[in-house]
Picture (cartoon, rainbow, N blue to C red):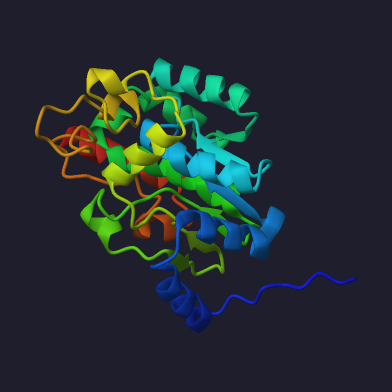
Length: 256
């Protein structure tokens, strides 16, 4: 029997996105699994707030590929937590790394790069690895929420990319409170740095604990006029950046 392929068109995705505004995250995930099966993957940062989506998804598709971007700058606690959860939940985690062509650049400028040019750093260590990982997939599940940033507030539950990949954001309408309710209901673990004030955790050089009254993501790239790594912005549509050009750009930023 031949496989029935779900035809993704902009008009259909627009209609479904509007319908899914009133559907539960589990219903959206189940739809994605039914349509794309093993042409579907998800990404996770393994933060405390990431676990509800991770938990929901593996209940529906236990062997789904889970992309974890290993930038080389993570907190030790993040890596240990990821290993522990992958073992206890029997997760199919796939680590993503920067392209090998950046090795010389990384050896020369690795320590300074996150602080002097965080956008370039994110492009090399996050955007490019994810671009490569999703090639050939038809669906990509992410955990972004509208209450996190101004950029994410404009997102849609289904977003068709230029190359035909469908980005699926099941938790887009959820709030921090709903995340906490789900965590409590299913007794989900928490990242060990949460109790130290790290309510949103990225790479160590660009993350600090938040102060009382601050937004959850206030500790990400603090004082840098940056709120996104690029996975969920126009940067993700930028398919290549020559290493030589990047080096010249970085050196100019260093001098200035």
